[in-house]
Image 1 (tube, rainbow, N blue to C red):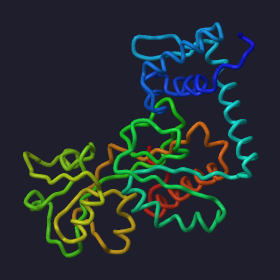
Image 2: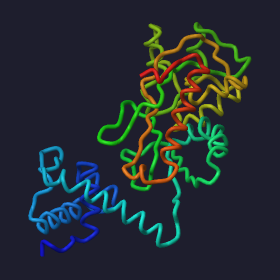
Image 3: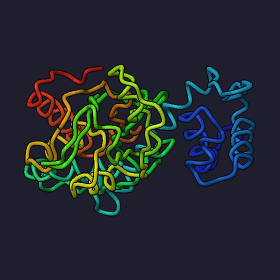
Length: 299
């Protein structure tokens, strides 16, 4: 029996659990229950006659057998994917890219024609949501994630870290002294808030009313219409500032708590165009920061 190949589903579950080092995380990725994942791993271990994981109180850890088996399983899946594309006559698959909606609309979309001109035959699929997922999906090949810290356990690198500063419509009358009397908008679930910005400037900021929205896009629409102020940052606002759609009425900025990270999935190396798109993101970011007078990503 040990000479027989284990079921493909068991191997897929093992790869997900090893990637997440969590049965719960694997269950989420595979749309299964945690108990089903646990049972499949036990079945696979019984089939192999080897334990693949150490079950720790708060996490999983691969055994020596698990560490040896994981690259073999991943290589086998890569061969299957490539072979399937050859059999069905598809030598190039779609590159799936994920980022939050505001970054997609305000930064990525205006620059995308440049990438298209360089790679006209590459097929792209963009998934833009309000907030980033807690864990990358198997369907996502490249992700630009806005997060407080670098994601762990996956291939991630710092793409850019900006500063935050007040912005408003041209002609909006406001000074540092009158700021707290103005309508202020902020994006919920961020740490780079008005209170954070004020603390960085050593300003008194006690119970100042702020209107919160779930997206930067809503706040930007209000601000562009002359409805108040919000905290902007360069990835989202540099083009608006350059075109005079918004202005910085107060020359006070603070380093942003969050940053943008580039994440490559385990299968990204096998997908035509993934390396080129990642390199293009790095190049566009470097050029963007250079034009703003900032070298590097300000890690």
